[in-house]
Length: 186
Image 1: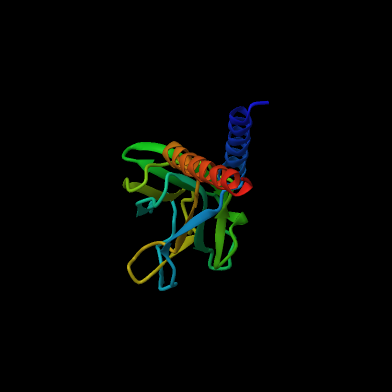
Image 2: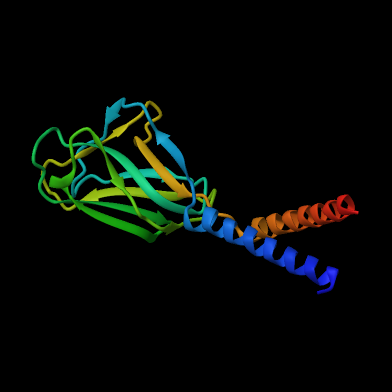
């Protein structure tokens, strides 16, 4: 087989390997990043019930929310009803999660995992906590800046421009590597 054809086949195979590694590493098993909205427990909200809804502004750091943790308090009592966690884009609801209040543990994070909420980085959203309970309800903790004690987890994935850039860089490196190898072989 011609030497140039061998080099082209070799470059093609290396490019496929790089794309496979990129796909597996960044698309199948992405490392997530966290955005901590509030951290230090300072005060609690009023009871979340039919008469009181908690609203928190949220500005995402990335484009895909895959997890959320909210620190709740139940006053170590049985709280009837359900709590709704909603994410709104203006008036449009883009996410809603309902949990039975009896499943919420006092003074612990409620973890919402395996989410896939597409948002726009830097866009302003509203996180809303509401309940169908007419009496006492659960509460959420706030920090000194009056933000909910909340952590958002984002999927860290590559966009198409980043994938193209990586491929171009690896293609150039592979060409240089092949040229160096053929030079040293002479």
